[in-house]
Length: 201
Image 1 (tube, helix red, strand yellow):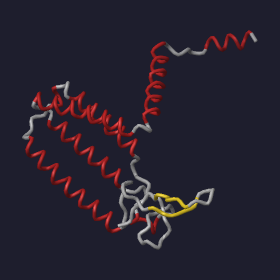
Image 2 (cartoon, one colour):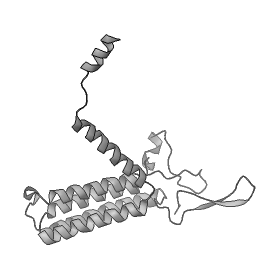
Image 3 (spheres, one colour):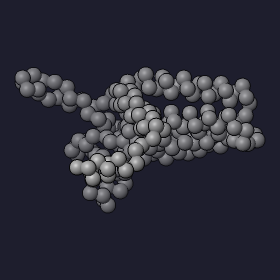
Image 4 (cartoon, helix red, strand yellow):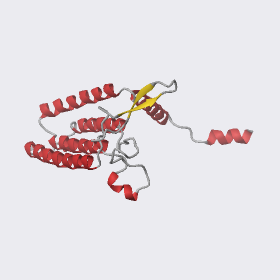
């Protein structure tokens, strides 16, 4: 017993910084977990943060390249949010579930490549990082901002055109509004509406 006590006492104990860091990480994760069901509140918070960032950039009249990078990052997140987890064009080479392309096919739920919560979390974190960059002059690269706006609009149009063509080709809508409803019966025998996850077009 004495040897075990001595061995335990020789083990390195976590210092106060390590314990505080672990505790802060636990609190941070707990807040994220509690915020998961509050979709509207989360996005309102993100909108407030983004407006604060936009006002800061407008008043400082700089850091346009950071804003452009933020826009490109958000565009990539948005495309991943609209895309199915399993690409229907690769269904012949995949064993996983795919989207139905005909009304007679078996219903399969739409699973996003990027879930809504991860979309929100990554987007909010990106705005905070962009805001932090505005405090460092090294990131204020001189650039003619109208060109960046034009580049972003062109890139957005091309990317969305390709995504819309993909949605039309494989007949899916990655939205929950106006979903197809199916008639079914509950345990008591009453007829109820069962809402599907994919609306066919």
